[in-house]
Image 1 (cartoon, rainbow, N blue to C red):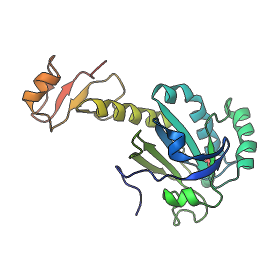
Image 2 (image 1 turned 60 degrees about the horizontal axis):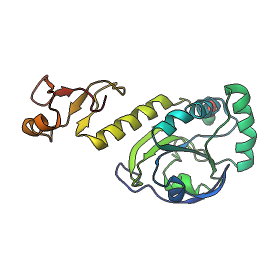
Image 3 (image 1 turned 180 degrees about the horizontal axis):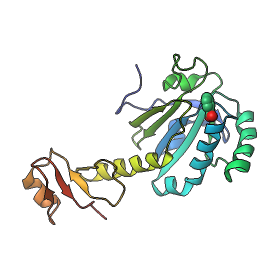
Image 4 (image 1 turned 90 degrees about the horizontal axis):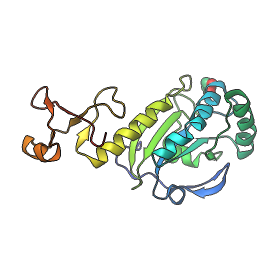
Amino acid sequence: MALQLGDLAPDFEADTTLGRLRFHEWLGDAWGVLFSHPKDYTPVCTTELGYTAKLKDQFEARGTKVIGLSVDSVDDHHGWSKDIETTQGVKPNFPMIADADRKVSELYGMIHPNASSTLTVRSVFIIDPQKKVRLTLTYPASTGRNFNEILRVLDSLQLTDQHQVATPVNWESGDDVIIVPSVSDEEARTKFPNGWDAKTSYLRVVKQPGS
Ligand code: BEZ
């Protein structure tokens, strides 16, 4: 069965551009973003990996480690990195897993045989410091992902883990949030002493805690 939200992210050992690593050990106490791309030396993937490298500071600010994966070799990853640097202005500054034997791809369900029997789809997993899967996302090979959205989800997860709030449609960090329905008005008066805007009894909008 495919990995689901709340599942323990499977541990594995793999060769990467930064040497061999054990996934859980490498993650340590950090949040993690594990993402697959279909193939090295392909155009959409080239733009995705360059952009992700540009977000290094953004991921670090969120205490998050990023790791990529495809079924190509470490040598191919290194060779392709030069093209990424030439065309995107920055080379990958995170490890890239060489999953030639597809062990990790199969563990994480990154190969969808009816899309391609040999290549990984564009999967993303956000993993929290307890090693639980908190987001899964699958895009087709022909559609590059929006990595700003991954940052946005990290912001939402990290906020909502700390406070009993949820984030509404198109929310960005700093925007108003929603008090979760499990919090009664009585509890909310203690947690949100500055009050909230009750659009309905269940849609209670409040300033983002800490903003
Ligand atoms: C690409 O990255 O451009 C790509 C890879 C596999 C299939 C289609 C596009």
